[in-house]
Amino acid sequence: MSDSPLPAADIPMTEHSQSLEDAALEWQVLLHSGNATAAQRMAYQQWRQTSPAHAAAAQEAQQLWGDLGQTRAAEQHRAATATGSWRGWPALVASLVLAVASGVGWWQWPALTSDYHTAVGQQQHITLADGSRVTLNSGSALSVAYSAGERRVILQSGEALFEPVADPQRPFVVQADAQYLHSAASAFSLRRDGSRLTVVVREGQVQFTGDHAPVLLQADQRLQYQSGQPLLAQQAVDAASLTAWQRGKLIFNGRPLGEVIGELERYQHGRILISDSQLAALAISGVFDLHDPQGSLQALQQRYPLQVTYLPWLAVLH
Image (cartoon, rainbow, N blue to C red; front, side, top):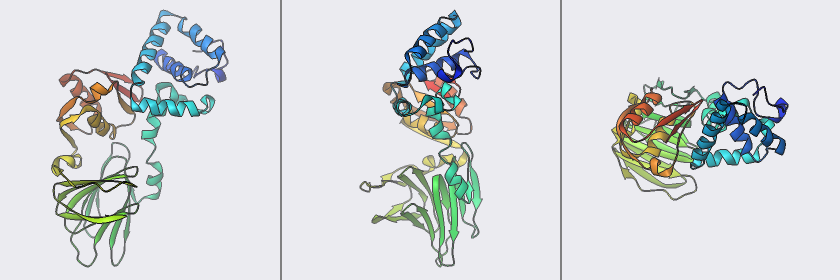
């Protein structure tokens, strides 16, 4: 894009663009930002007419933008675009990294204030001072606050599987904001998605307390809690499947593609988007290796009627 007639400050990235495809995406982001000037729109038309390759890249980027426009992630992305300033954004906007960034760095602050943390795609097996075990899932953070009368751990972000050792004198308590899980010898997981908590009990029983009536959860039960909303009833589930991530696997049986992709996305940097709601509802079954998200996408492409288009930090299913 160094052949553009406008100064670098008035257009998307110039000499920093790595390819025509990246440059074309930069233009789409700018043109749909609500901040594009008449001069910039004219410069775009000149840019796309530079060569047949420029025209082809522009057409592909325009088509991709149209496909992304049907997804919830794209709506959020455009909302951020409309309220921001183009000149203040980092160069990675070129490949829709504004959509990516929300999923890449969200855990960094909890990581700085925690005793244990994992990066995206990483897991950590922890043995606490009393012998209790914790498996920390991708992009998670945990702090330990043991005292003489209580063994408390605080899940600051992400997900963890807990296997506490029984000790009648010192109860084992997992805290997430103002909610608490009390357990003896058992195995259970807790996941935090913003203000939403999901508890899955694999073995034993767990008591869930907080700003609601206490609930006792048994093995093969799941409970979901949303701050400010009524507490939902327990669900009967296959807890071994739901906690298979501890063994490096994700197991799905007739689950919507949108849900499957949402899980796979947790284990990789970047975003995975689905082009339309009909495809997102496609029922998926299978066992996937969570350490190989790209291989999982290839497996989906082989088994189901969909295609995957790869861009920097972005994969689109269509």
